[in-house]
Image (cartoon, rainbow, N blue to C red; front, side):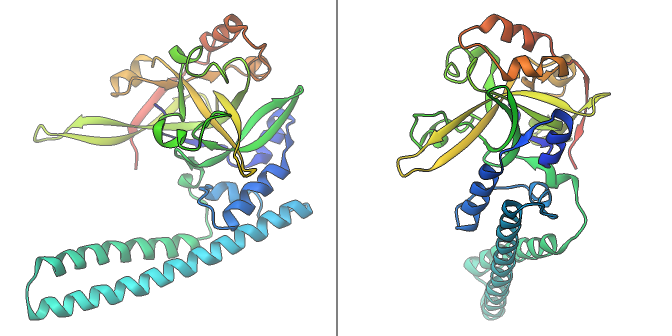
Length: 312
């Protein structure tokens, strides 16, 4: 699995690096959906790409972003006030009589107060942080595709829902943010050799089990950083899903394969496939059903050494 990655969030990087065109209507669509109240996870760095709009559509996106941030701040402030009152009430009752219920109320309220304060401080900060560019399953990110030979940048969700499947596919196939190479011609046959994409990533992250000092096992997050390779052009698959009420969802999965020795030694059994730059066009423009050249591209990958450490 590749459960999280730090990826290019600014569409302008794809435009500059690949001469790609921006599918602005698709960006407008997902920002309007989030603005309407739909639960759509968009990394902060992707929002920041529209901080200086240059077209009417980008101005519309910025307006959606500003309204979303205003609402998020109002909700966090309301949550802080509610939980502060909840904490005070539990503390007053506890001063009169010790109860397990009020101890639990204090714990829950304190945790929610910390979360609300963090959210308010995070909304107020001006500087960018590396975590602003990370994606997780269900997050959106800019993705490079080919349409009639033209390189296009579209926003897509990181968890592929194939065309023609019900929305419940997300729940029954919660791991579909990764496409195992050994399953490409079976489970992923509707996308493999049909709809390919590339996602530019700097690092990826995995949870692995490590033994603690007392011998007990614990889950730790490991950051994998390709030594000597500034950007990995990760191979992916994508699909456009149409819902019964006219909804549109573009979503993608990253191809994973057997890991190099250092990733396996770190405790993980899968790794994304970084394409060579010269193979990107061939990957983006496959011939349906012609698997051998595609498998050859996956074999002829970049093979950096993955430095790894526990994530901060």
